[in-house]
Image (cartoon, rainbow over all chains, first blue to last red; front, top):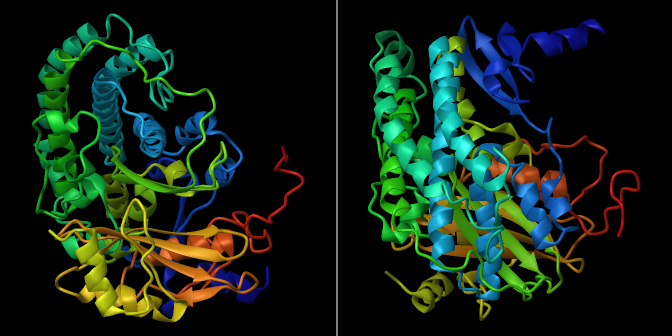
Length: 375
Length: 152
């Protein structure tokens, strides 16, 4: 390497130090490279480099039928797999004007909330570990196992279930489904206060989380930061409230909003959402109506020519699906507006001016899943 | 709360060049490329509308033209509209950038440039996002890749 190139790579303007965080850094939870420009220990600016796990899901969708491409959407945000599936199913049902049975709506909403809980638990344990509290990792995974067991019993898979199909579900849920969820609610109600004892009230944790990564409401809206990250900045963006789908119009729940705008506010939103999810589950689990597990669908699904748009709330924010159909059995163009894509690129805005050690806390508080960014 | 017709009426008054197609799922406005930035700027700054949240920005290759599609929402009033620009020049498509209005557009536009080859005027850093520089534009319908894509 010539001297000029070395100078270009290592030393930025004004002899600032440039350091690469990733692509294989444990706190990025995937293959993400952050090019961080430092002045001393302070972050001057950072540039995210993505594309390490770009699989071209949008292009693949154009070659697959609607039943097939559901399985691709699992692989975007693998921790919100059920919500991703549901978004595609609902857009097909919208286009064909299929009315799904009430039973399906209830079960889908229950699965939404279980998936959200599992995702928030994994976020909680990884966030604690990023900040050096290894115990939280064991606590979180221990409780998450209960949800994954419910998934495994009903659909045979634990993470990427592809259980919903256009029109309904792949098959009916296991007879134990309701009982196990009720057991889980009872169990997790006793365990969730432990989370607060371990991290929320911990002074060391609070010192690391309070007052850093400030994101104003305007920044959140401008950068399209949705989900718990946006709601930590008092940006009301819960699609479950704005445009209720499934059985969300039949349950009472609050949209959690915090005005702290910092890492701790985003943490508190997710902790409160876990309580909210438990309450939604409790309202639904006893009231699942009897009936068919799927509406009558044709074996070959062809969407009428036109354009369709649908939004759902995943564990990380707003997932929007935009489909252009030309009347064939596969979409002409399928676009996924994924929450993590917008959530990642606010990093430069909210991490500049803080210390490099805080960068870990800030990226952890955004709860990024990298395959969702690259698609 | 305005309905679809009233919304179209207000937006037609802002920029008379817009075309409102019938029978769409969401209120939709097709605007010439030269009025695109003005329309979105007015949608954002008009106090009756205040479309301050750019949900998604993408493009579609219709083979005869390239269409840029923006989904905008107003967080105050919860209106949701679609703004479309039809670019007939497929060889060298170009359109104004929205970065000055919505910071999130910077990376959404870089993604569109990466996958469709649409250039954005006044974009601060128009580089490819995911792919290598000489890869071609994979979401165009005439893209061919004999090694990785099997034609069926």
